[in-house]
Amino acid sequence: MSFPKYPEYKDSGIEWLGEVPAHWAVKRLRYVAELNPSKSEVRTLPAESSVSFIPMEAVGEDGSLSLEQTRPIGEVLAGYTYVREGDVAIAKITPCFENGKGAVMRGLKNHVGFGTTELTVMRPTAGLTTSDYLYRVISSEPFRVFGESSMYGAGGQKRVPDDFVRNFSIAWPPYKEQEQIQAFLDHETARIDALVEEQKRLIVLLKEKRQAVISHAVTKGLEPDVPMKDSGVEWLGEVPAHWDVARVKYAAKLESGHTPNKERPEYWGGGIPWVSLNDSKQLAKVDYISETKHTISELGVVNSSARHLPKGAVVFTRDATIGLAAITAREMTVSQHLIAWICQTSIVTPEYLLLVFYAMADELDRYTFGATIKTIGMPDVRSLTMPLPPLSEQKKVVDFVLSHRGELDRLITEAKEASRLLTERRSALISAAVTGKIDVRGWTPPADSAPADQKARMEAV
Image 1 (tube, rainbow, N blue to C red):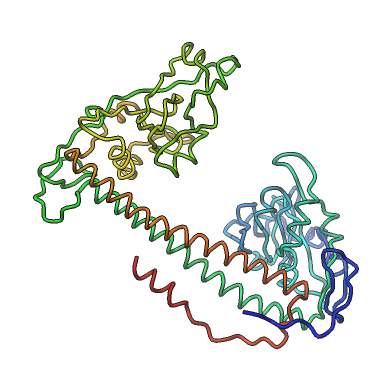
Image 2 (cartoon, rainbow, N blue to C red; image 1 turned 90 degrees about the vertical axis):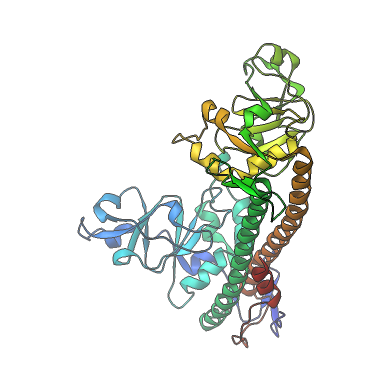
């Protein structure tokens, strides 16, 4: 979709903004909105008056606002940020600001709300700007980029200063034109959001399909007409009659891990890979692991209960996120938060055992306990049961799963990329509209139609 430019431009006097439509007025934000309005106008309300309460988690990254919580005004008048119906609020602390947390305050209980002190509030000046247009300006890429660069503080306490918001300069179109631009952006961003949501649903379906392919192949095999038998194990159900069913510990030797003394630097950085929960993101993505965030030394191994694990061991997280697994591509060690299975290769291959762990994801959830950090006890680990087809069938199952999973992963990657491009398109469209790079005054809502290729892919899954 392409849009015309304005017929006449002028120099804005702002380097990043460049030229703007000739009839737009360059102003600092403080001249079109009041920053952090005073609470004095609601101090006379009865202390028992119910108002909306807005913690940071109630403010969405997409302009949404959750107003499930209310409190008596007497409890929140001191110590919280005041907002009124129609105000625009944005998060000022990292990473909430960078993530785009902000919204127009609508639907407030008794038209009043109080929220986290990590919000900056802007109240549009009547006749100069609207709540919706102001929100578009402060959610645009220029405002976000320059706001991030102005942050002060350290680490997780960095904040966007009020002076940046107050002095942010941009060109403002006439009030009526703002309404036209807003109508255009409402329509176009809703259309893009719908397409992004379709991509997200497609990704969910593809992931479910991928899990189903793994689970069916691992537990039912590849021959649809083979005789079946009851496995006696709830999560397995029926399995091919010629397959065995056994506890994992009978097919693979169970090994535990350990953490060398962290106060002894000579135990660390020695080049021996040490798989820990710090490698969880990698374990969630790969079948084979060869590098780890931390390494230990031979001295660290000797002076701890850590053990050398051979290439081809299947490592498995038993704390935090349970059941993340991968095959060691070289000799490694693991922390006490993981266990390792050394396969008896005459009974089970590492690749098939890995797929078994992928397939039993829901079963592993049943064993977990703990409120803060989830874990699975060693007695439950030792009781884990798996199907055991002949080695020749294990190889066929692995080859089948890897082939089909690869195709599904490709489709998932395509859907994620499409979603990313749509999100970039959305951001670019907002920025172009509020900086006057496109003229949408003659725009009228077109008839929409869902993309045929997207529908086809959803139906195929």
